[in-house]
Image (cartoon, rainbow, N blue to C red; front, side, top):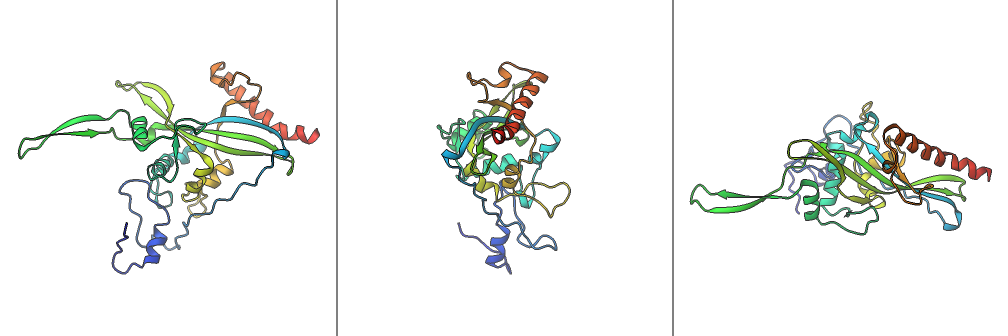
Length: 284
């Protein structure tokens, strides 16, 4: 698509200002420098993970954890957006990337069932409604398919699938996120809460490129903003373990046998075992 430039705006200026792809329909990035500081919002490069040889893996366990974005430390996920975030919340960044084909969405956390945009629309918005439009001039009738409007605030949680690996070559535990899924609150027709359900799963290594293109809101200083890739890699979020392969032959979620405070204690116990495993292996 050709880029139409306004008078006195060079191609270089437009490309700089368009370094971040808007994620909301109709959101316009400024065509002039908005402020006295030079626009430094250039996408970062993905910092590649160091390869781990199979012979160096002394320990590996898989963990699923949940990020509740209503918690104070995680409220950056709810930031409505500005030029550095593409003008949208984190879920809107993901949806724009999926819609534009920059990352593939899957129905499961093993990434075996890819989803089309039509399937995603039904999953996220529900079944479309067919309405009949009567044209006032000639009285003819036309059927139109209308989807409900998506409300990004209904996405209240994200889940991560990750591997904990002790790399003997470096002598330390490493965490590798494998997948990420947004979870949406569902409501009945009377407005009562029904459940929280996954929308789709994304393969995290592919998502990292998208993450480098957008900045995370910093409540203390607008100059020092990290990318979403740094945010996840540095683990600047609060979460709790909801399932693991640690002493779990039946592959049960914690919620299957523990509730409330007991579930929280079990989550903390698993986290403590993983944290101490590095020291145990050094002792071994």
